[in-house]
Length: 98
Image: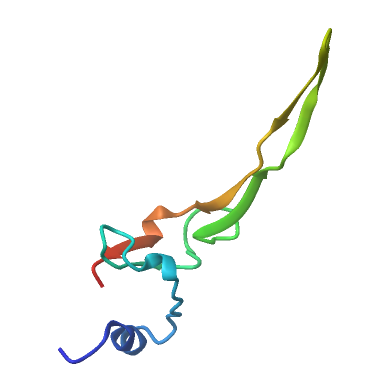
């Protein structure tokens, strides 16, 4: 065809933004991958910010409490969790072998 994927994307979708990540190289059985996703999706009935992906911290590290024992003290803690949540999976496409 003589056209790279980046050239085709820029010509076909001029408002498309391309971001690279080294983690996508050889990520699927030694083959490169890519994700196409809409940053925002308008038109559904939701009342949120319409973003497809969000980075959240649903729980932070905190102490649960201290229990006194006859030969010491037991302390317990919760784990902090954080990550990316996909709110609109229909707006995400994963491709392999690019």
